[in-house]
Image 1: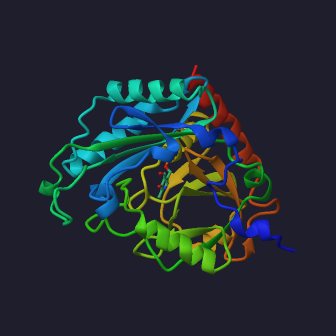
Image 2: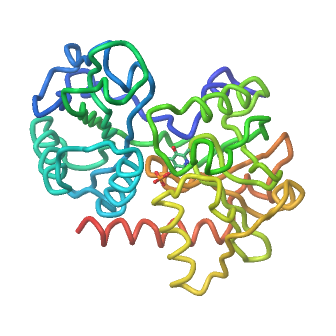
Image 3: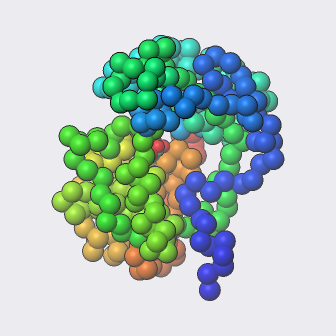
Length: 310
Ligand SMILES: Cc1ncc(COP(=O)(O)O)c(C=O)c1O
């Protein structure tokens, strides 16, 4: 039987940590107590979702896969003419400064947000943002809840798709996540934890918050990557497969093949790899989506993080 808790289980469920009540938030070079951390109602991010963000993790005092996150951030900001006004090194120093001020060293999650900044009038045109970008860093003590690994995630296929790159390219980690939020709402309405989103051709693509993988007969499959976030964790998993002799394919596949998978899992910075226990009410594999391939990849990924944050 489902418990009420079962209904609020998402891939970003984290353990309650009371230390997060009194944290300092970085806003444009200032450290501000959480309760006072506010941006203008004229901010482009608030008004239009006009901004980019990165989710990153701090382990052992080091930002995991910092270069990869900066590559994605700077590339997407360049594509929308958003001048961050800081170098990668400036960003790392600001992150470290904020972590230090908060006494944070490991198991920390950061949401780094850059918007086009405060507008002079409440309209869309980018030229109305005249005072430079708004840069915010929210760092929290953050550990995924154990139940994510134990119970896995239940997915429902949702009507909302991630579209073609000439609409809003899924590779923008934009402040506007409405496409994903709609997918998430549809999954919840279907009684699931997260939405499995198809691509415009009906192939299995990604979820509303993570990248999606299946395992069939020892092979790891994920979508072509054409319509999903170019996830840092997704790429790390593909690289780990290649480096460790695990066959991996970025390919089109259908729901039939996803339902019939031996194992399935999600990838993302927050939760690393999370098993998928069912899709559209159909159980995955024999063991709640888990299996030997996911277990091996989880070990390899933990080693990679440890090496990267040494
Ligand atoms: C829609 C979506 N897919 C996947 C991911 C996972 O990406 P990463 O592995 O870089 O955290 C994210 C993270 O921001 C996301 O927003």
